[in-house]
Length: 79
Image 1 (cartoon, rainbow, N blue to C red):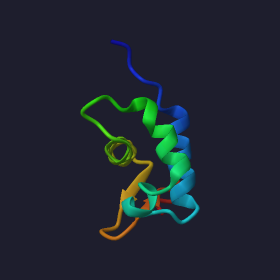
Image 2 (cartoon, rainbow, N blue to C red):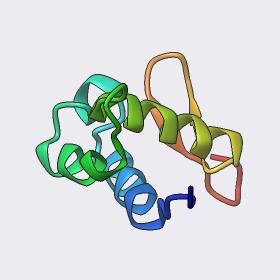
Image 3 (cartoon, one colour):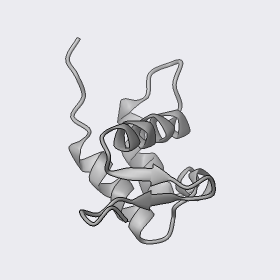
């Protein structure tokens, strides 16, 4: 089984956070993002789970952080 390339999906996810869709609820109802997530779904996974997983990957790689309320982009200055 080959690994998926999430480059375009992650870039769109970051763009949406930067545009103010910085809560999971806002991201999971954004139709273009849901459409991009669909190819990564399998029978046991739906679109919002793909979004939630990618948010965690972006957090773990230091690109975003969760403030307890919203997701934020981490810049070089640390904010």
